[in-house]
Amino acid sequence: MNRLAVFLSIFAAPAFLFLAPKQSFGQTQLDSERVTVPSPFRASPFDRDRYLQVPRGFQIRVVARIPAARFLRPTPEGGLLVSQPSRGKIWWISETPANIASPVLAASGLRLPHGMAFIVISGKAYVYVGESNEISRFAYDPNGHTLLHKEVVVPNLPDTSSAELRSSYRHELKNLAISPDRNLYVDIASSTNADPRDTTSDPIRCAIYHYDLDGGNRTLFAKGIRNAEGLDFVPGSNALWAVVNGSDDIRFPYHRSWKGSGSDDFGKRITAYIDDHPPDTFIHVRSGADYGWPFAEPNPDSPSGLDDMPLDPYYDNNPDWNKYPESRFTRSDKGIQAHSAPLGMAFLQETKLPEWLRNSAAVAYHGSWDRTRKTGYKVVIFPWTNQQRPGNQVDLVTGWLDEQSQRVWGRPVDVKPSTDGKSLFISDDDSGTVYELRPGE
Image (tube, rainbow, N blue to C red):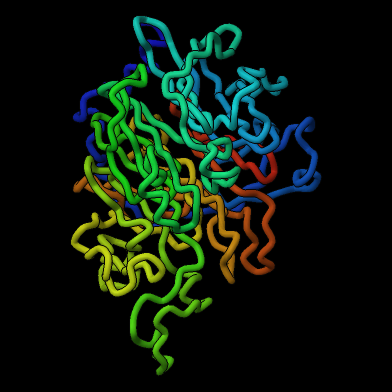
C-alpha cells in the first residue's frame, strides 16, 4: 500500500482501533513556553518574544506567516494546506521543521475558500473545497503541491452574491467533511443573527446537508444549527460532530427576575445575561434532528451545567413557547462558554501524540468580540468518554489573550494533526500565523 493510500485509509479504519486508552484526564499542567520564531517570520507580533502556555514538555514554533490564515488540511506527502478566504487562495506549506521556504500557491481565484477534505476516488487523490457559493473538487498533485482541474460538484449555494440576500450574509464561509462511508456533508450557516427567514429558504440556511461525492442526492441531514464550523467524524465511525457558534445579544426569555433583581425582566437585554447566554455548543449531529435555532437556545444554568442542557424559548421568535414547544427540538450534547467562537476541530485518536492526549477532540476558540470580559482565544481538548461523548473541557494552549489587560495578540482558527500524527498545527488569522505544537524530543 503506498503512502497516499495509507494516509487516506485511516478514514475507513475499524472502530476497535480507537478504543479509549485507560488514561485519566485531569487539568493538564501548562507551562509558559517561548514561541520559537525563525528570523524570516519575526514581523509583528513576533518583533518581540512571545510566550504561550502549553503542556509540560511540549514546544511551540511558528512554521509559516500567511495573512488571514484560516482552515488547515494535512496532505499525504507531509505538508499542510492553508485556506485564505479573504484572498481567494489556498497555500501549501512544508511540515519539515528545517524547511522555512516560502509557501507554495496551491490554488487561486476561488470565492472565499474555507473547509477542505481529501479522498481517493478510483485511485486518484482529490481535495474538496468549500467555496462560499459552491463546493468544488480538485485533483491533487503531491509533487507540485497544487490543486488541479477544478470541478464544481455542488453549485448555487447561498452567499452574498445571492439575489434574495442583497449582499448580506453573516456566515457565508462553507465548512465540509467526508464520512468514512464516502458521503459529503456541508454546513450552510445562517445569514443572520437570529432571523426565522433562514429556516424557510431553499436550501435552509441553518442546516447541514448530505450529498453523494458527485454532489447528487442532496438530503437535509439536520437543522436548527446557526453556524457549524469544525466538522469531523469520530474515528472508526460515521458519527458526525460539530462545534457551533451561538447567537448574540439575546433577551431574557422568562416572566421573572434574573439573578434576584425583583423585577420582571422578560424581554430585557441584560448585559450580564448576554455575556453567558446562549452557550456555544459541541453536538453529535444526528440525522433528522432540529437543534432549535432561532426558536430555542440551550440553557447552561440547569443543574447539569453544560451537559445535556434544557432549552429556553427565544424571546424574539418563540416567546413563552407560543410557536414551537421545547419537545420539538434536540438538546446539545455539550455547552461551551458563550461567545468563545469555536471554529476548527479535529479528533486525535489516530495520532501518535502522547497517550493522555490521544483519546480526545481538539477545538480552536477564536474568541469573543461582544462580551464584557473577553473569552476564548485558546485551543482546548475534550476528553472522549466511554459513552462516546465529550468530557469536560481542558485547556491545551493559552496565552493569546492577556486576562489582566484584556489585550489580544492572536486568534486561533483551526487545529489539525500533522500527516505523521506526531504534532498539531494551529492557524491564527489575526496575526497571520501557522504554529506547530510538538512534544519535546
